[in-house]
Image (cartoon, rainbow, N blue to C red; front, side):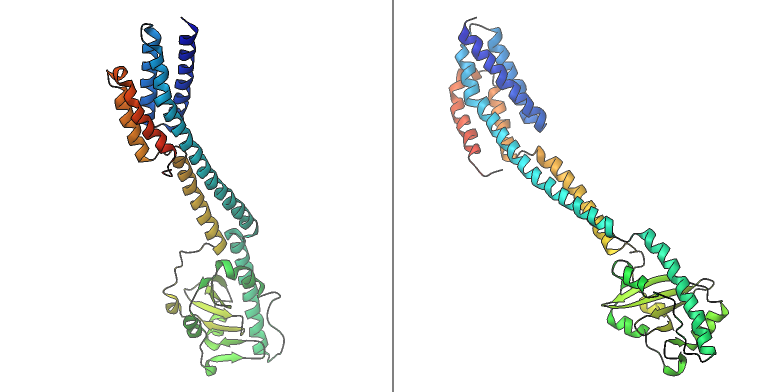
Length: 320
């Protein structure tokens, strides 16, 4: 075997190895078939010394090299786009981490609303005593408004100004009033009847205005606390019939959930984009595979000039 033949066969094996790596990367049938057919062509020349070895070199120059260059360009372009996706994923992860460190979780909320209910119940007991004794003592527990300040933004349900206005309307003759608070007479009677045993039910907000809604532990009745006026009234739940009570995630937790879902979609997109080949190029590769599968391809090898020009033209387009 002369040196020239040996060198051409060696370079042929190298080209085919490059094509094999690309076929594994893209996992595209058209690429894999071209790789297998190129192996067959190589073996044909390797096993038949009487064949003109220059034709094998010409085959790779006109066809294989252009296919490899085209696939490498697609791979590089895909990797650049995938890198942008992963950059976005990392930014989302950083945002999720920052919000997770600052968000008040459901566990925090559930623990603190029990403490808030206790504060309100104690305040109402004290208010009953103050009203009974015609005292001017301040009835409210310390930091009674801190609960809403902490959780209203994330955990309270939005209502309209009209709903808020309807909830806090009352007839002056139906309430007890002192310098510190206003409470519906019948509500005070019901609180005494059930020994001031209530639990926090939900928070409502309309703009900057908030309402805390409480439920009697032993009966299906509700009342509201409107901190802006230190007002306690029975709560007409019919006014709130349009509220979606199942939507109990905080605003930050919703955003974290949405970002996590978005990252899952981006991960899937990145995986698909990494090995994406435009359909036009797959069609062209299929067409070229048919040509190199022709049993008489050696007799028409010079005709690959046209196909090679098409492949090279693809390299200069903005198709991908």
